[in-house]
Amino acid sequence: MTSGTARSTHRRMILVGGVLPTVVALAAAIVMFSWLPELPEVIATHWGPSGPDGFGSPWFAILMPVGLTLAYAMFVLVLSWRLRDGVLLANQKLVLTSIAFISGLLSVGITGTVYVQRGLEDATLAPDAGWWMLVGAGAGLAFGAIAWFLLPAAGAVTDDGIEAPPLQLRADEIAVWSQRVRGLWRVTAGPAGLSVTGLGVRKFLPAESIESVRVVQVSPVPEFGGWGYRVSLDGRFGVVLRAGVAIEVKYAGGKRFVVTVDDAATGASVLSAAAAARRPA
Amino acid sequence: MLLRIDAASDVPIFDQLAAGIRTSAISGAVAPGERLPSAKELARTLDVNVHTVLHAYQVLRDEGIIDLRPGRGATVTDRASEYAKLNAAINVVVTEARELDIHPAALTALIREAYQ
Figure 1: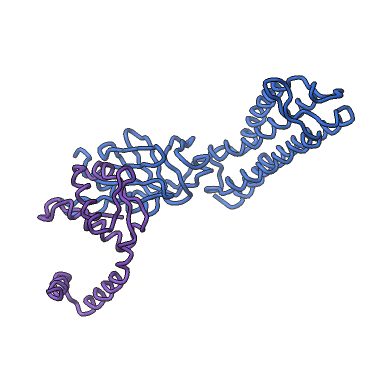
Figure 2: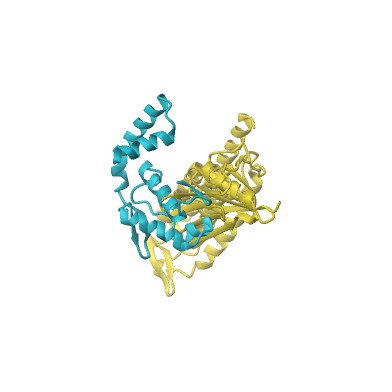
């Protein structure tokens, strides 16, 4: 919880997500550079069904793994930078290990496709190197697994939000609340339950099945690995469209559904009242 | 938008629904261009007949507050935002009434009389 933990976690994120993948890509660049005298002036960079069909300077192959790894690492580090209570969440770790995967894939894969072209006069004669990308994918997975263990152990979100107080309703009064999210989605809560619709998703949780309703704060990348209809490694799932306030519903024996929506407190209190009214006494 | 409906009231549910959505449109709780929940979705969560919701939507369409198009659902027009001035005036009236300690029922009666 201290800022010291957060600082050391951030240091580890930079090391495992930024420095190590870049070092691996740099090593690949140095190896490919050392082959430069043996390579044709133009090398094959892409293979089609009938052999090489894309060509470029060897420098392109030498610099690509470093360039892409660096760019991707910065992109992912920025998106997953925010820590909750100074700990890394499982999804956040998974997203960070993808940097190591990309680095391993490109470093080994591209180096392999260059390796097979040593001593060639003409790149059109380059042998099929597709399987080197498979080897690269394997190396990426292995590097990703190593990165997972080098990162701090996955923590859990300790702040589990606020239980929504049921909306005060008079006898015979019912309430319905509806709110759009990101233009295309809509969340509606009423006596019968919770409905979330948009982009082909139609999710309905009947009020009878709802056990508790909370208002929580959600960070899309750290907790759900991104945006959209998502599953978190902590067992929650739902529609995560932006960072911030969300309704979290526990239903049907402990399943947890999350939807990010403005004015979540009102929606949660409508739903909480509906669940209380339908709950068998 | 939050709509409250009194199931025991003499006012039909479609009327209460229409009134609630109208108020939301005037207050800006639903914005011009915003698509309302489909009648089916609203009816399902409210546990009322889909025709009740459609009836409410038809009332609002006749008032020009929403556009109803098959397959496109109900969209809020900018008609309600023209009520912004009225809305501001209502705020002034209510503030004044509060200061004078006038009961909402008495204020409503005054407004009704002014209409005669």
